[in-house]
Amino acid sequence: MANTSAHGKLLNAAHRALTEQQYQQAHKLAMQVLQANPQEAEAYFIMALITRQHDNIAKAEDIIRRALKFDGENVNYLLFQAQCLLELNQTDDAKAILAGLSTANIASAHQNDTVGVLHSRLGQHAAALDYFRRACELKADH
Image 1 (cartoon, rainbow, N blue to C red):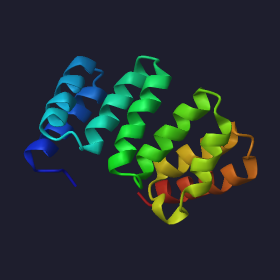
Image 2 (spheres, rainbow, N blue to C red; image 1 turned 135 degrees about the horizontal axis):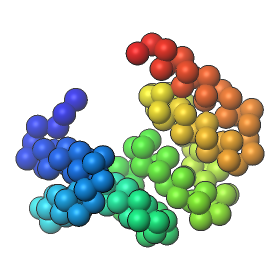
Image 3 (tube, rainbow, N blue to C red; image 1 turned 30 degrees about the horizontal axis):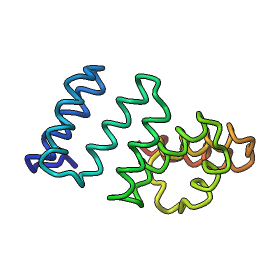
Image 4 (tube, rainbow, N blue to C red; image 1 turned 90 degrees about the horizontal axis):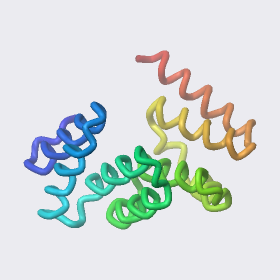
């Protein structure tokens, strides 16, 4: 569901710009939101996505931590952080995030696939299979 608030519209536009690889525009829109509301987790998430796209994984992980301060249960943020940590070879921290996730909160095919990939990259192939199966089941329903 689209967010119809003024900040929500800016965030939606920032996500569209990010999808179109218009990083400066996405950054500008996310910053507008953060200037008005420094506790807007989604704006930090957008900033982290931009930063990761520019291969600054350590900075992206730092930024996603800010988002998690304001929305610590957001599965997308947690998965993004786990991806960053894995890329930074902080495997124990990535494993801890995965262990803390509730399967009930991993709702989409994309989220399940991401968890599967993370488990696979951590050498946890049996666990990965369960998430890949669930991703396939969810994708088949749509």
